Amino acid sequence: MLDIEYPIKGACQCGGVTYELLAAPLMVAACHCRECQKLSTSAFSITAMVDADKVQFHGPMRDWSRVADSGKVSAAKFCPSCGNRIYHFDPSDPEKLKLKPSNLTDTRIINPTMHIWLSEKQDWIQIPEGVKTFDGQP
Ligand SMILES: [Zn+2]
Ligand SMILES: [Zn+2]
Image (tube, rainbow, N blue to C red; front, side):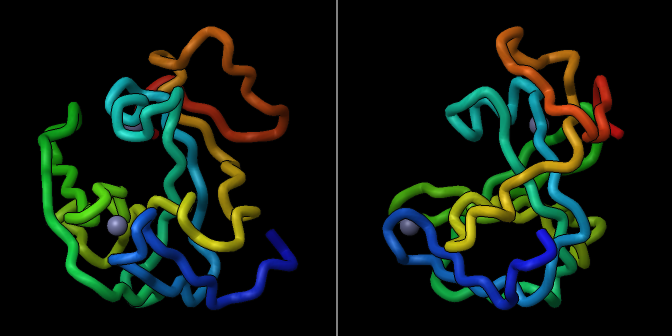
């Protein structure tokens, strides 16, 4: 991700929510857990960990939350019009956001260096060489 230039603009599918990512994420991870399979309507979801002050959001968002296996609350923000998930966060640690980076314009960012919850991974997925892996939550 060396030649990616910031800020990068992002938008939900309908454009009702837009944002700017001002700096490189702290890390990008793929999660293969069942919840992320449902969330992404795919086999895994991709999350960029970012400092909350490094992203600026515009437009109305709605909230949803659930209690994760760890016992922590996983809170979600999404577009009320198209339903596109924008980010997740832990309300007890609001300085860090788990951005859903697939709606950024520079999609080179959606290249995970860490894969987690391999215990729930789909059998056909081949994990690339050279990435960090965890069977569950790191
Ligand atoms: Zn939308
Ligand atoms: Zn997950």
